[in-house]
Image (tube, rainbow, N blue to C red; front, side, top):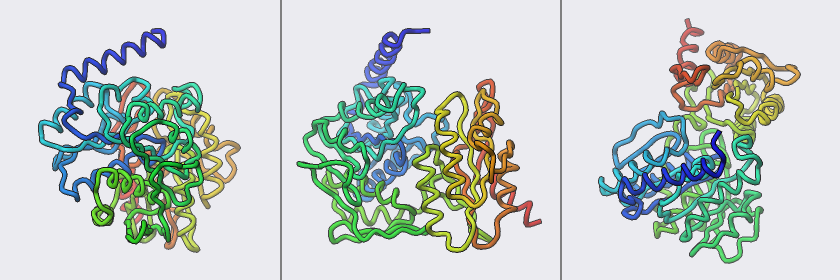
Length: 413
């Protein structure tokens, strides 16, 4: 096995090779980097929509999709942040297409592997930081430090979630200008930063509303977490001189982020598909549903990734499901080379009040059969992904949305 310092050197060399190969493309663009545990994709897409509303041609690199101007294609790499050559090529192609801006999701693993190197970031945004990828980084502290790598690389504009408990860590990084956003700003003392606070916040499953200053905002996206995402995007826009009215007009046009609190059925009951793969994101999804369900039941389908990844969170996610959901079905997700039932057992714990169904299609079908009018079925873990990773490095075609619709058709017959 290659020593860690040698492996780091290899990744650094590849980053340099990539930027030389494609001619330092970020110098021809204004690049906004978005990092954090949850909400990166939504925030990146919100920023891009605002930039487009302001009349700028924009490129995007996110875990959901890639975009250069009007050309959009799905990210099928299963990587939040592309490798050095692929990312630099995207930026090169964006500059060649006369894009003025690029919005790039920046992952902790990408920072660890120097994929952010030699990118001239105009702004760095952090959504939130909660435990994830602990096995890969070695500790939460190292994971947090990796996230900080983006802020160390960007000396211009920093945009920080003031309600996140790690706010103080990010505020300490030097920058020409800082923005701190939130609903209350409870995470740190934002002295010297420009403060952006959402007031009169109201959220339902149908959407959210809030006010910034005298401007009213309406989102078709549910949950307080999406208000935070919108605030991050608003701060990014304001830092670039874009007015609140443009932000308002852009954000209200966003109908859905694929696989993120995505309502795929509305009758005879509602079915949502969501990517939530961390305890924090899962709990926020459950809270949003539970707070808006009325007298119906919340029926939850969940799993956890294999490949030895973040095993610690499996029982935590199972406990959250038992806490918030009226009925819980634990199933397969992306087992890689692990035994699916072993993963399911770790999530289910003592197995009380939990159904264990290995076949994900069967699990979704069972959840739909259990549901009645007024109930909500929430399927988490894969979002808009179009494949499932199984043993031997294989990927099999998969879609939670398609499966929900196909299984509902069977029930209707």
